[in-house]
Length: 303
Image 1 (cartoon, rainbow, N blue to C red):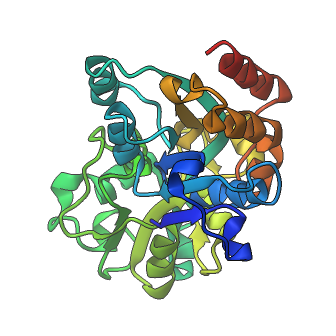
Image 2 (cartoon, one colour):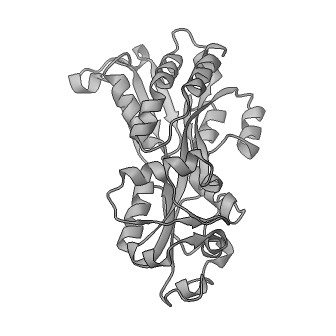
Image 3 (cartoon, rainbow, N blue to C red):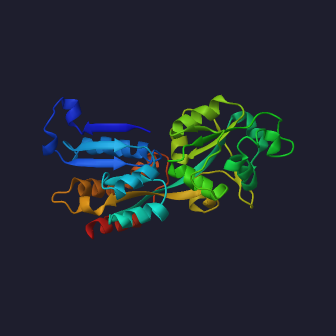
């Protein structure tokens, strides 16, 4: 998670203007999409975004939704769909928003390379490992599968504010937003990769985009959903063989910010849709079709 406050482009020039004279983007949301947005904002700074003030805080999808519904965020990068309690909160506050799918992602199970001899992991085995109620009970690899080493099982997890945690938990054990009490927890995908790489007994999960950027040496565990082991990849995401663990990523934009005169939020959102495909590919995600991004642009126009 990174919190950033900057005035685009003006930083490098050493210029400071009155904050009231600057347009502002208030971005709060998923750290899964943090590298994507940092890259986008850097490029925006070098072009039409010169002079725009940005406040960005990548502290989780859950917090992003909360601040959107409270009127404190205008753009929310999200690793899950805005629904359930979050949607009810926005409806209660009469907050309207535009939903913009931005890329495909997948949650990748990672383990220390020393466990590669396992070959694969089954969904029922992931349930045994990650079910919150098994904290302090399932504590050795030999309890997961007969024949695995009788060595400690160290579970590593993103925190409960993470949309990735909610997604993975919902798919694996049905308890969204809960983690084992004995798990090592971090808000950062990159930190999860480092923890797993440093611990021969560790297993965790991160975004495929984060894995593509990580320098940590981990084993990308093939998952058997019932029809043979599948490795997370662009191909397995698009052909749906990795479907249980693949997902859409989103950007949510406050309608009120889009409707402002000379809206910088609208300008940036349009700019983003024009470049989303290349940005997604660069950051290790799978782009949507050009038609999808054109649909997003029409949503912004129809605000």
